[in-house]
Length: 536
Image 1 (tube, one colour):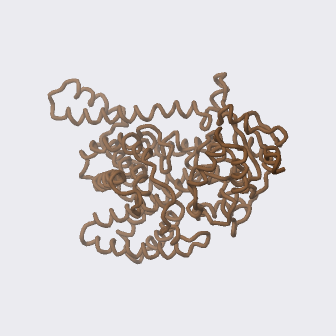
Image 2 (cartoon, rainbow, N blue to C red):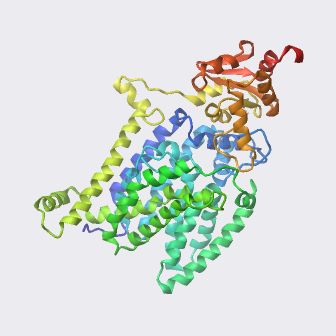
Image 3 (tube, rainbow, N blue to C red):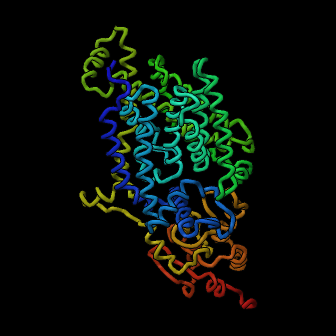
């Protein structure tokens, strides 16, 4: 076993943390090379709030309905943009850096609170690498996801969660007179308002820690949990930018994505869930016991989504929570890796010699340790290639050095120029993928690939968009759809449309701007050109 002061965070952890912060700072600005990233909706939320902090209307649709994304995170960063004049896109890049710093310090605080500080470097490496493919989903802190996911409010909520869990340990030691409980109330309310899924994870963790506490302490901790819930409910219900009570009681107007759930349970989470069994060899460590229990409870809870009816309250959270729960496996495995000395080169000759010699009681343990190292390397190393290869990561820096194309599509600057004539709340119609980034530059759209909780009829909007871009739809039907949704502008993306549909929809006299495959058309002029003679 490696011996080290259990309150000391290793220097290697801080060095890796600095590297990760620099990596995010250098690459997060290139996130606009990724079409479907969540960052687009968080940017338009920030942009809308920067323009009008109070009563901003919806950031996606031309309606006065509020958005559940008007969270403390968004309000805080939008206020900074308003005060400093910093562009919201750059503000969000700054937020990614801050969130990464909070993630790193949160991991350190949590491990220190459990007396496992020396495991911090191992835990951080596992957090970056142990996925069955980088998920590209909220609450992923995979290496190749960091630059474009750390802008999200979920990243901020996740970091807050780590601090709350550390504070809960302090509350267990210090009691009611400590500042930890009121601070946890505020942080839990922020986490829940920012990203409800992560807020649920926060509450799950403190409940787990309270129930698992020894009897002399358990009653106080459970009492603390109930007081915390009351305080959180009160603070959330007072949030002025949207009704938390309405959000919590509204039936979600969208179905569970079983495809994502299946991938989460059978691919992304599998390496950590399987390797979690290795950590049982160190189950005498309190953190290992607790975190493995928490991880497996969350993973198997995620399986319930295939059994429970989709309309049942809570299922929309269940299908996404297994990925969030990987933190339990990752940190438990970090303790295992540190305690076995897997990161220490000097321990490897003995380990390999034991395997080669065979016939010793230590062989199974040595085999487990070698397998853990192989699995971690197998899933971590390909991410380095992804980082160097992808335009939304580090390709812009590497490609010139190798004499290769950087493949930057620079969507934000291109849409900013293309949509310059579009008014702030003008409605723009395009295909679903092309529409997604549009409100981050100008205008509002007919349909978004992510739901807005307080905006109904999302399914109807999708069908209308599909109908408009169908080759079988008549011009008369298309005109009716334009009028139905008060469409002011049309954007055609040649790469997203069938050539025959593109040719049918293109009206030269309606063209206002071009940018290679993007064409902006005036919907009023387009409508006049397409009107039947008897209606002109």
